[in-house]
Length: 232
Image (cartoon, rainbow, N blue to C red; front, side):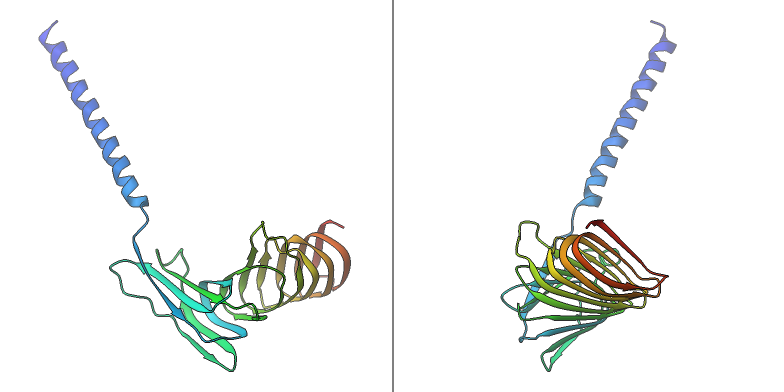
């Protein structure tokens, strides 16, 4: 074999080894980049309350439970986040709290609320609510988004759900089969992927409602609004 060929083959091997080393390094660094950060957390027990009132909050989650407390999680070796709230006259007020996971990596704020909480109010907020069992709930939203969840294994039927929303609010409801759904929507949207026995109320000013299934429908709707029902 000529010396030139030997040199050429040696160069190709060296380049291949460099490419392989670079590929391994990229994969290892990629694993490091997607590794979840270590978190610190704290739980603060709260006095009882019956109403939740949120203003200018995002990324805050709520869970229906047997006790009331605030849980904060934050990235280790960083400062503990401040959570603004007050409790008076049976009302929990939270305000100016931004825990949007797309904005602050590794931060979480969640509130556990008792079963006797029936009113949730939100203004300029983005909230996540996990429910359980058979309950009654009144939602009042202004310029807000709210996601209402229920575990698919929980077969208890919701007694009554009232949704009053205005000013470009959006409500999404998952796995909450309901006996009675009452709505008052103005320039807002309700996506209800669960079934309901009865739905009644008003839609106006480009409002919309989507229902997966309904047995009885009694809705007043102006010519700018829309109703869609998959099964009736």
